[in-house]
Image 1 (cartoon, rainbow over the protein chains, first blue to last red):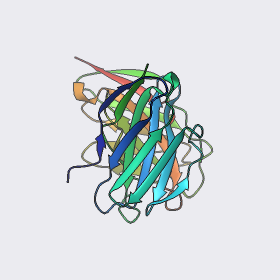
Image 2 (image 1 turned 30 degrees about the horizontal axis):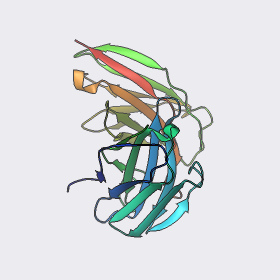
Image 3 (image 1 turned 180 degrees about the vertical axis):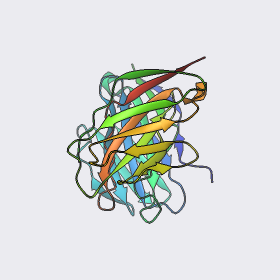
Image 4 (image 1 turned 90 degrees about the vertical axis):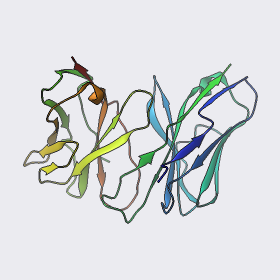
Length: 116
Length: 111
């Protein structure tokens, strides 16, 4: 299995531009998570999906952030408009509820976003 | 979810055992202890988890005290590649799949 795939791996953009991050979870996994990591705030859960349905988006910082999961094999995290404070590493992770141990999340390599 | 307390950083000599402590004094009866680690520039990686019995796998051992208020992750023969941030997380088995990451312990393995 290729693991969780994220693209792009690096993104540099200018303030005000739209940014779209992409994630392909491990085949067969029914949970998908988006995290953001910064030096100041550490690793924060932004939103997670179960069977393509958003379950908890309480970590989404504001309306500029949106996430979708149109099917079981693809999810996007969009920032519009982007701001310098959005600069961070964004991780996608997936898990399978019936796997053992439950709670094991598999993380992608992350997307390093720099907003100038 | 119960909160955890971990030392900010630790050092270990290569080839020696690394013992990483975690306090979780408010843990509930149905909450498991999970350990993840994050090697620089990579996503976190699952290591091991347990409820009340000691656990061992190919990566590490987990020792949970009888009162379950603390635990220790043991890397029996640390290598330079074990240098990472180690996160101790408590969460219920089943239910929400959320993991809440704290600041973790930065383990540096020295040659």
